Figure 1 (tube, rainbow, N blue to C red):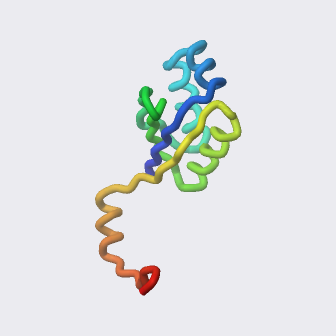
Figure 2: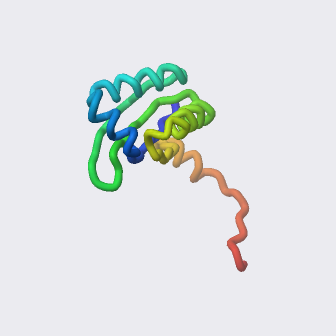
Figure 3: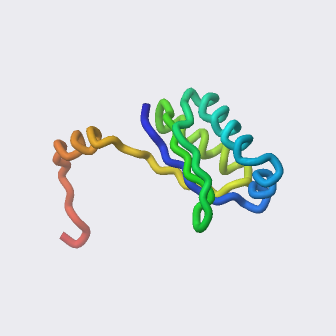
Length: 106
């Protein structure tokens, strides 16, 4: 299954909820979210600084990742960024392709 990195910051509302219910509860909620989209939570790390969390999901496809991103955004509890992760094998396959490209100004 493709992997997706979700990273972001809790809003005031999200931080209050995290403080009240704790980290284990948040991870369980995210596990349930992944399962509801046909996927699996690979890892969840809390952090401090510019980013509050790093989550890696195994999800069936981009549509599933987008559905999760929309649900998360609509909650108003976090500001999230989603990144599609690629394996070394996928990069090797991409390197074998030679699309035609003209740079700007060329």
